Amino acid sequence: MLPEQLPPTPILDRLLTRGDQISTPAGTLETLLLERFGLPAETGTAPYALKADDPRWDEQGWWLHAEPVHLRADLDRLRLYDSRHLDIEPAEARALADAFNAHFAGDGLRLCAPSPQRWYLHAENPPRITTHPLSEVAGRSIEPFLPTGDDARRWAGLMNEAQMLFHQHPVNQAREAAGRPAINGLWTWGGGRWAAIERPADLAAIYADLPLATGLATAAEVPILAPTADALRLQLQGDHLLIQHACQSAVLDADAPAWCEAVAALDAELAPALDALRNGRLAALVVDTGDGSRHRFRRSALPRFRRRGKPLAARVATTATGPS
Image (cartoon, rainbow, N blue to C red; front, side):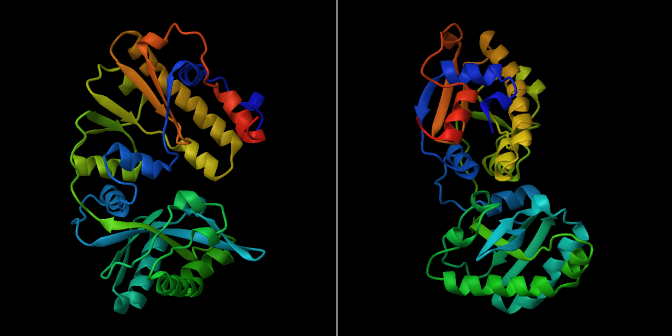
């Protein structure tokens, strides 16, 4: 994407060029959320997302994300497409989960699908594996991201067995007959157990509709508010965390128009916060871009001339062409 294709982003440009830049480790949205709630990067995220998708869940057992995916052969590789591209119907999810549970009952595995797009796997005997988030592999070859660890070979065998089971299932036969991509695999990651989280002392509320974020907030007893720009016009006490993940979805899809739309929406959402900063209702505004940089913008930065930071268009140009 060329910088001139970007929509105007005056608020983001001001934050990126005049704010104080703080170097941070680059990470996924998942690791950034864990960090904000004071948790180590290896914390299992599945139980917290499950709690958001199924508030009646009893918080017991060891769970993995078990994302329904379409695996497509691409030369000598398998490329993964996540559920955003599959339009899974609730009845399809239930049928495949029931077939999985009947087949793998003897292995101590149980699949549940509280949302057609997000599934979870309970394991009586937690496997000793290291996994990668779906966001790292979506749209890519799965080979570099397969689980590793003492139980990796056995786990790969179980997941291959699940692929064969799904391939033969009437749900996928019907989908393929209709020209729809098969739900022919599970991407497992983020295993762990539910535990209450100590509430971050400075976190007053979050604005989010992302299951992991709302699940972590539930565990930490942090209020959850709708992620609307109007909410940021209110008098703010303490830190408020706004999560905007439409940009990530566009990046995963390599969808430049969708990314431009998401960036424009984010710029509009930040305008009320900048007004609150200007009027003294907000002490600071921090933007974490997830690429190893965090930008803190205080009221004192409002009259600054441009500093060393780059506006969004320049950052896009650097990404497209490589460092100069």
